[in-house]
Length: 263
Image (tube, rainbow, N blue to C red; front, side):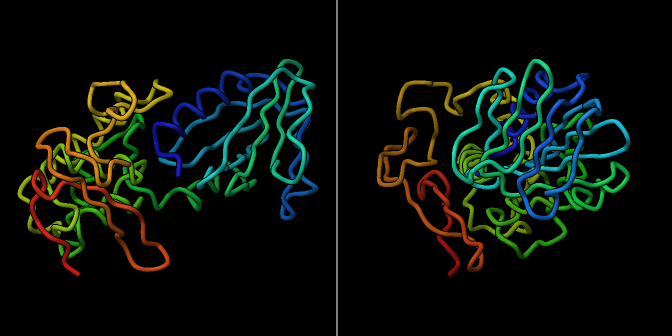
């Protein structure tokens, strides 16, 4: 699933193409909004909120999209033919540019006043202008028995982290993903590391958490199961975290992040 850095860059690209321009095409290809037409309205701004995208248009309306696992926005000059087949969920275009939403996991059209109904449950946005680390720590601490690995993926605690940044953050913190939140002395440090990693990668097309952009060395543990840890040389472990069917991949080093799975 695209994480907060990818969504941040996507919002910026959408904004560059659409913001401040009048829509000449509006094509919702989802049943719920198939008859909606935003043609003639100006796009006011496009912003990210964790893993969510909000495109606000004139007249008090907001297009809410979520990339989920496979979604993307394709930006091209106006008039270019969208991809064939049934993968296109939404097309927004003006006289110069078009934005084509492909395999979007969520497409909503709501009044701007209703945005909170869609994203109001989210915790502080790691890349947002109102980032509040103290509030993120407070929310994480609210369920002390939950593993830190599961807590970091709960977007109600802090918004923007996915499986990549979870693994990398906990490795750098030296904390096992299986440790309950209540047993961790410095949750604030974990939160700060996560924000630093996303912030450092918000402008990069290719994530690098190690400082080494060479192939196979860009991440400490994520995607490196069975390979030597770049720090200690021991084998990187891989497992599943979370209750079915919401379990997600986790990577960690048993030596650098001591603490065995609890179950």
